[in-house]
Picture 1 (cartoon, protein in one colour):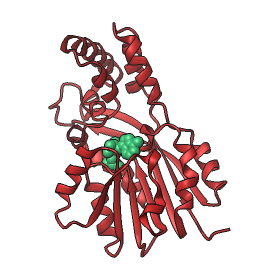
Picture 2: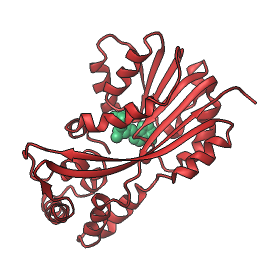
Picture 3: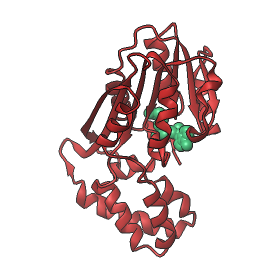
Picture 4: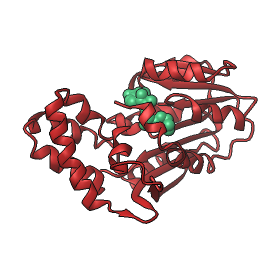
Length: 267
Ligand SMILES: C[S@@+](CC[C@H](N)C(=O)[O-])C[C@H]1O[C@@H](n2cnc3c(N)ncnc32)[C@H](O)[C@@H]1O
């Protein structure tokens, strides 16, 4: 579902929303910090530097990703646990959670709005929940992916997996869901104008960007080389037209939704 090496090609762009999200979390000396859908480690380890006294737990569904995270965590600072978000039982931690962060992961978890009560319930008094999801389902990068899929010979297999990826709710829905759980809520959207590949080294920087995440379902279906090449040729041409190269690079507009909930005290 996710290609960490490909993702790391754009690490500074990808890390920016995490920093913007955590900037709105006011916890000073949390005891327990959880990163849900933590990925291969660098961002979770940054939590240990911000809160050196905290127990930090990284949860992810992928064993390969967690192996990479463990290799990066040379001081054994984080507890890395394999679990699907849908099945995670916060009571197994044995303590209330002071900060629960989930960055760029819930788009892979359909129905995650229904999981918010369980996660909010896991928060300590003065605890924080912080999430960020991409809201780019209608951006040209993704709309063109669906258009190319619709005219590909394997359309019947491609379209369902691409539509399944539409698991992200509107900002107001996150606000309503978290506020109704008794949290003080801060929700916003940001569109980043990412300048990709200013040096001109990549044939199609937007293609390289989506290869790390949004295109994964397509690549997983198209295991035949010829079928994959046909898709990528058609898609690359469409991306070239939608994202022309400027003298400073290729500009990818990318909208993300952020939601932070603060539990002031239990009702
Ligand atoms: C795009 S990566 C983001 C990783 C990291 N949070 C970051 O911001 O760099 C999404 C992560 O969510 C994980 N993931 C996908 N579905 C999941 C699920 N159902 N439960 C837990 N983790 C999941 C993937 O394995 C991957 O590590």
